[in-house]
Amino acid sequence: MVDGARPSFVFILADDLGYADLGCYGARGASPSPVLDRLATEGLRFTDGYANSPVCSPTRFALITGRWQYRLRAGNDEPIASRHRGSPTLGLPPEHPTLPSLLRAAGYTTALAGKWHLGFAPHFGPLKSGYMEFFGPLSGGVDYFTHKDSAGAHDLYDGDAESQRTGYLTDLISDRAVDFIRRRQGQAEPFLLSVHYTAPHWPWETRADEAEARAIKRIVHTDGGSVEIYRTMIRHMDEGIGRIVEALRGTGAEHNTLVVFTSDNGGERFSDTWPLVGKKMDLLEGGIRVPYIVRWPHRVRAGGVTTQHAITMDWTATFLDAAGVAPHPDYPLDGTSLLNVLERPDQPFARELYWRMKWRSQKAMRDGTWKYLATDDGEFLFDLSRDPRERANVARREPDRLVAMRERYAAWEKTIPPLPSDASSVIPYTRADLAHPS
Image (cartoon, rainbow, N blue to C red; front, side, top):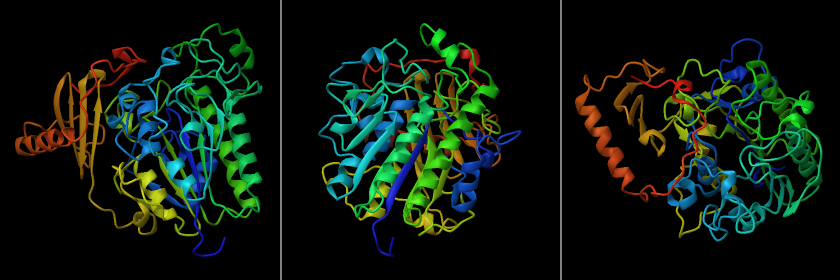
């Protein structure tokens, strides 16, 4: 690539990976992620990156549109479930501009290898929303060997056609990503490759667990698993990411390809959230703070760390900014470009972040070191610089700050549609599984 050429993009999204599950983010014991750890040293690591939601599909709506997920009806479901297969309502409208559709219109080749989870055929799908190629499942949780969803329906597609490919799903997604990159060698057009792994989302299966997968009659995510199986699933994904990076290097695309790795929400049952608390479905830090690793040899210096506050939909704005592509004028972005931070990580800008969840009537806002949280248990105010575990509620000590943040949250909430009364909330835990402030 020559200087001034438009960059290519590889966006890698893990599924239910917690903030501290990677070695470079403090995973205890032997690191399950040597490739990602190395990418962090070769690029930039964010300490305060967030997901748009603590649950799968809402974050994906925000990512693909660059806008608050709440602006779309289906972005309020927590998440879209397998029982919604065939729904004409719960999905990403094909007419809505997306990151892949905007880049495609600007001459990019676009592909998704991995999980979609933004609505089912025949009304919705990746090829209807800007991707030129697609390989992966349409739903949320899929068995790694049988490729069946939680309702027992086979769910693996190549384009619009059902695929009968066999093998461990994490490896199949890596295979397709590597194949796409190799096929792009020698092509003049830049590309967007979205690699959306299902790992380490349940069911808890490693490459060695095919016999167990064949014995499962219906996926129930509370069954089985262990910390070691979970960490091995991360390692399998990490190995695939190593193959993707090697393919970029082997095809000469490495220098001017912006690679971003993150997770769609916080970790689940076997995730090690330390030093945070809370998990998936929670607006505590463990449910929404996620790893952000960025590697772009052309413009991002190695070994950087930034405290910039950012949220998933910012990557949409960043990619469009880097490509020189304007958002659709009728659909202004809610995300903010991080391009300047990638080049000057020691110069973060002030940013307020907001979240809303139907589950437990949760609301949250972050402003600087301060976090406002409201749930059906009450209101909380935390100084995250002193209390990252959100144990010391200082709402009574800081009444003026509490009122100010509550009012700013209310003002933001007026800018988005109200929560639909029929939005579903699929609760994957009992209350005993979650750590809540008290």
